[in-house]
Image (cartoon, rainbow, N blue to C red; front, top):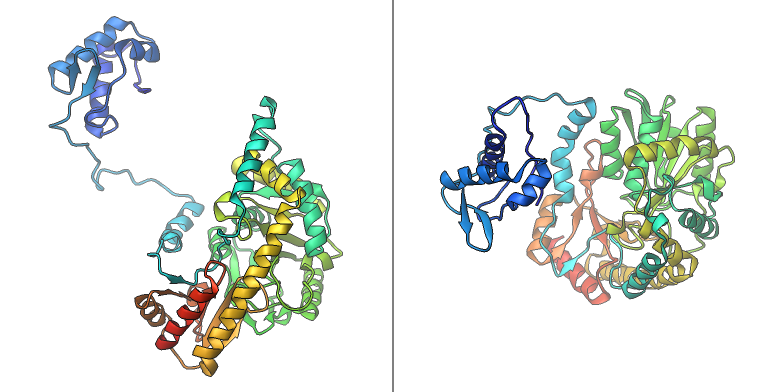
Length: 477
């Protein structure tokens, strides 16, 4: 145990200062009742004082009842008679916050709501999660162990801020083949999840008052980041074909889109609108941020190439993550920066957290280059396709023409749009009473909407659970 006690040679006797420091920590709860105190020899070495001074301090603690001695064992904080002191709210100093801090205060309730874990339900249509049953955890553990064993001591020092060269190369090769992304490894910057990638983009390219266009509804994470950056956000309504470039505001510097599977509605941006979006960006000297959060999953027709792959001017920043395909707590994402922005994004990553964890990056690089990642994705696609089919059949059987469905062409979630006006909160509550977990879409709208929808994810429920869960949901709707 290390004890920090500030000492001054010009104040009270040293033993008194040591005694007061230990006493204050006992009273504040920093040294809990019954915990063992460092030996007098240890504390004398930590504080750079003679052992005699430490002995005198301990004797004072013992004499006043703050500590007790146990023969052959040591000195312990007394177990009774003290309760930790706490400053009352009135005593707390009124500390000034930055603009970002004020934005964080405003977002705190929403953040708590996002992080709140609801009770587990047998038929839980949770969305935005990877398939933990399918992921080859044994192989992942072996890969991690192998990387840990072969990593030299020098490899445990700080690494490149842009990320492991091996992982950047692996991501580049994979995206060229699977998503038609046009890039070089030097353009890949590893981040702590896609959320940090979006945050870095906002910090580098957006200032207070800048105009930014955002799909409505949209991912709550980017909406909160934009609020914190004090940008002027223009919600652009999404229709059955996604974002319409004709509705974009003229003065917007950036536009954030999820073209492969719009979040949360699930609609897919057609080629004509993709081309028009790039033309709009060229006319207005704007940047397009493509969040391809689950572009790996498509079930009908050929996979659509990325928006970034159509960009010939370097106006699209491509953002991806492994949270949806590997597992959420891995916290490895990436952005593909236009060449003119690589250096500034790398510096911004360094300013945020210097670098992402090295060992996990090396393991993921081997996981991808060995072919294990693509084999795993094929298994997930087959499994998701089967679950998607079961979901659509169950919806047709138990909900029929009472709802419309969007988002079933890609990704791992769909949206039910009841044709009759309903209360989302009431549907969610009544479904939960029947052990079914479904989710509201309204929190993702940037401004109030007359639309009511129910989100259903299917990556973590099997076919039997899907059928029974939708049957029970049919009793609610």
